[in-house]
Amino acid sequence: MPVFRKTAPAAELCRFEAEAAGLAALRATGSVRVPVVIAVGITNGLARIDLEHLDLAGLDRSSGATLGRQLAELHRHAGDRFGWQGDNWIGDTPQQNGWQPEWPLFFARNRLLPQLHRAAGNGMERKLVERGEALAGRLAAFFVDYHPSPSLLHGDLWSGNAAALSDGTPVIFDPAAYYGDREADLAMSELFGGFPESFYAAYRLAWPLDAGYETRKTLYNLYHVLNHYNLFGAGYLNQVRRMIDRLAAELRG
Image 1: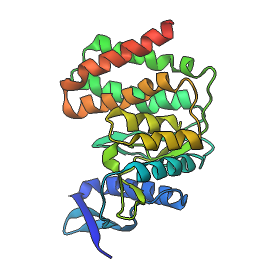
Image 2: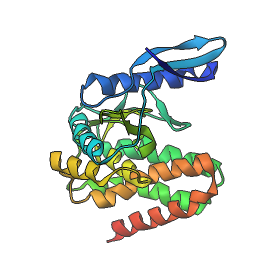
Image 3: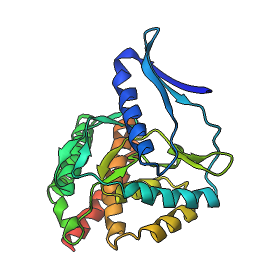
Image 4: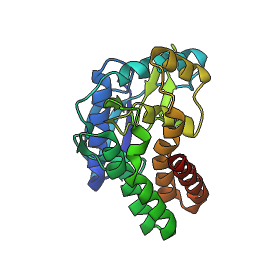
């Protein structure tokens, strides 16, 4: 089997172990194609993960629609709590997991607040961080009439982590898996674009979204934009500010 190998310093083996665990969980559902994990370990002083090598191309209308249906099927694999059995990574940032019985509590404590604290250490103005913390403290207000179940998520579903084989079979990879609100995967897919409209149409046909998704989409993507601020710098500051402004306005309304 042809192999695609990723390597890193030996101290980062846990990142590859977390990736392998996420891929195994997605694969076990039988919902959507993911690369087979061949091996994880240390060779010649380097951590490595060996995956099956796949010849991939971008999603088109047909493969996008198939992925939309398959993602809805994946999201129907539910847990009994929100979170994951171990921490993993979102890009190059550690992602805190653990378990929480309630989704707003999990998203505040395990997603927004860690990114806000990291942003404060990276120079974000204190007033903006405090506004983000106040938002996290009122998260339950976005879920008064909406109570998501813990769906198995890819967790980092941007267009760079989805593609198709030559026969049109969709493939997703590089997960940051956990059990959360299914809307979080859909929101991430919209943040940077790149998915065909057929993907969204097929998903909604298979499992319609709640009317409040358009507001919560901003909430969920605030996590990723904060992460981009922490990884890449102040170019994302104004976007963070606009998102916090919009969410604060929703709370006032």
